[in-house]
Amino acid sequence: MLHAAIDPFDQGLLATGDGHTLHYEQVGRVDGVPAVFLHGGPGSGCSPRQRRFFDPQRYRAVLFDQRGCGRSTPRGDTRHNTTAHLVEDIERLREHLGIDRWLVVGGSWGSALALAYAGHHRERVAGLLLRGVFLTGRADTDWFFHGVRALAPDDWERFAAHFPRRHRRNLLDACARVFARGDADAVVRTAYAWSLYEHRLLDPAAPQAGPALSADLLATLVDRYRVQIHYLARRCFLGERTLLGHAAGLHGIPMAIVHGREDRVCRPLAAWRLHRSVAGSRLALVAGGGHDPFAPAMATAFVGALDAFAGTGDFSGWMPA
Image (cartoon, rainbow, N blue to C red):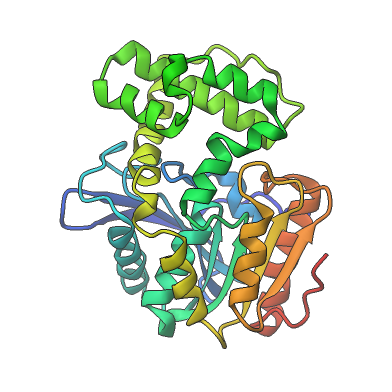
C-alpha cells in the first residue's frame, strides 16, 4: 500500500540560531498539498521509506530531522532541546518554505509533537493525521518500561537483566542513571539492549539476539537514546493533561487517528482517549496492527487516510477500519 520510492526535489539545512541546524527535505510536487511529517522517538530521525506514505503526484511533503536527531546537528545534543523548541522549529520551517497551512502528520512521539504544534499554531494547521498515539504522561512511559511485561515477559526480563535488581522497579530511571554516569561501555550496552527490546515490541517475530553493529551504528543508537531519555524523563515537557488540553481546543480541524489494536509500544487506550477528547475526529483501531507503521494493515490505513485528505482536504471520504 506504500507509494513508489521517491527522491527529494529539494533538501537543505535550516539554522535555528541557538546552535542547532535542522536537515529537511521535500518530496512530491511543489504545487501539491502541503504536509509536514513529524518522526517518532524522541531521538529518531526520518528515513527514505517514510516518504512513501505520500502520493508524490498529489503531495508536497516536508520531512525533517528534529533537534539532535538524524542528519540534524549536533546529533545527540540535548541543549536548547525541548518540545517548545521543536514546536517553533516546525513554524520556522513552514515560514522558510513559504507554506501558508499544511497537514500535520505524526507517528508515536510525532503524534504528541503534532498536537503540541497545533495547540500553539492552530491557524497554520489544515488537518492532523496521527498514528500510534503517545500522550507523554506517566502512564505511557510506565506501559513501555513495565506494563507491557504482561504481554512480553521474556522480552522485558532480557532488557531488565542489564540493570541491578534494585533498579528494575523503574527502568527509565535506570537507563537515565547509566547515561548520566557516562561510562562509555555501559552506555553502549544499554542503548543496544534498549533497541533490541523496542524492536521486539515492534515485531515479536524478530530475533531475540540482534546483529553485531558497527561503531558508527552504535554511536547513532547512543545519540538516539540520549535524546529520548532527556525527553521521557521530563514527560516530554508536556504530560497527558497538557496534551489533551491542546487537543480539546482543536475542534473543527480535520483529524484522523490510526492505532494498532495490538500496539505494544503505545497503548490503544491513548488513541481512544484522544478520539473522545476531540469532537469530529475519526479513529481507526486497526485489527492485527501493532506499532510498526510499515506493517501491511497499518500502512493501508495510514496511506488511505493520506489519500483521502489529498482528495477532499478532510477525512470525510476515509473509511476507518
